[in-house]
Length: 88
Image (cartoon, rainbow, N blue to C red; front, side, top):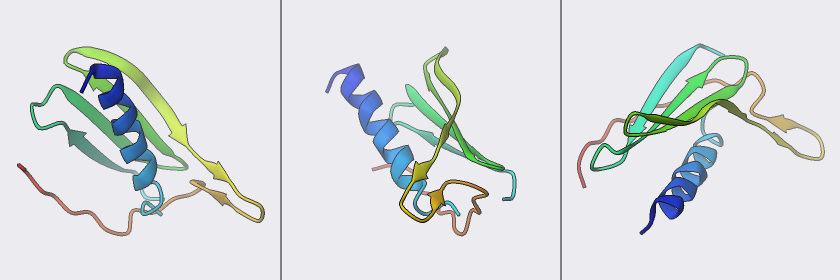
């Protein structure tokens, strides 16, 4: 899998997390198995994320938000549950 595919997969995973991240300021860090890719998620008034590859910062402080017909997902979110797993 090339780097772009991994990056897109990581962004999709982060976006998927936004569904379960419901406004305390908390941070979550995800790393690829080899540690090359890192996604940092910070929750405050919105869900912010940054993506790094090695020492290179690819995206910084972007936010996730989805506008639906009657609501906006990602505004004033709360982290309801967090699980830590290592190795696969």
